[in-house]
Length: 317
Image (cartoon, rainbow, N blue to C red; front, side):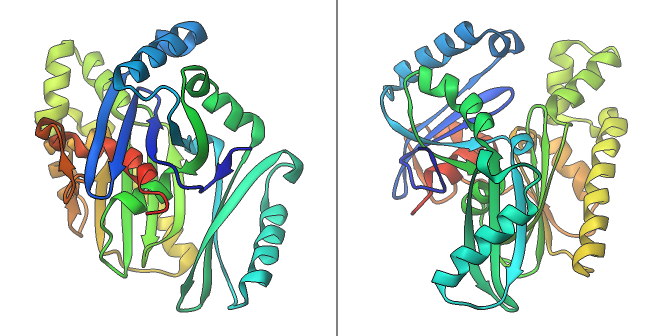
């Protein structure tokens, strides 16, 4: 049975528009590769599996063990605080909380948790997904030749990959091709996560609808001016501030220390600058490749795209 949160040597991030693979040995990146995935490939199982198989064969990782992430849309994630207690009692208490909060039958669920001691007790983040969702997500990867040994969730991968030095509230915005994940972390512990169906494709489609060519849209996405994307960027920001307001009201918090951008969209300097003008705290896009040795230095500038894969490869380290 696939085990949540079990360590694995390869990190494989299968997103909606691309797949990223990271092999990590201490501070050396042995593999760093990505491949774009078209909508037509995702809709044709045979075509998709063949494409993945050829990609994995080129990387010489057929038959290798790998850890993958489960999409946020498939995940049920909660963070709770429990009183201090022995580990033996903690396991049973968490199991009871998971079963109590699950929106579906525990019999059909695969779940696990991570715990750390906080100022007010034990902070527990648990994740669950229905077994059929895991099977559906990892099926093409297994058929393509990988040995899937563990499944993880995006927020925990990002916490491993990105340096979070502040004890205060930090907002992590992981903006991919189709989905933006809004995570709020305090003292290294996940407290809130939310997914919104908005991402890089929405930004590009907005530009195309405005009459820009494909080449012009790609250039604006990367280099600006961001004003040409103002309307759609403000829609994204509206969803972000909605999550921030909910967090403040729920957790009785007032201040934030930083905003961190990651994911494919974070590579865009124009979007980083636009967000910096909106938030009243520092906005940055830390490179998860910092401190790591790469075979190909040209890929370092794309570090934000590999955050989740690096977090997967760091499991158990």
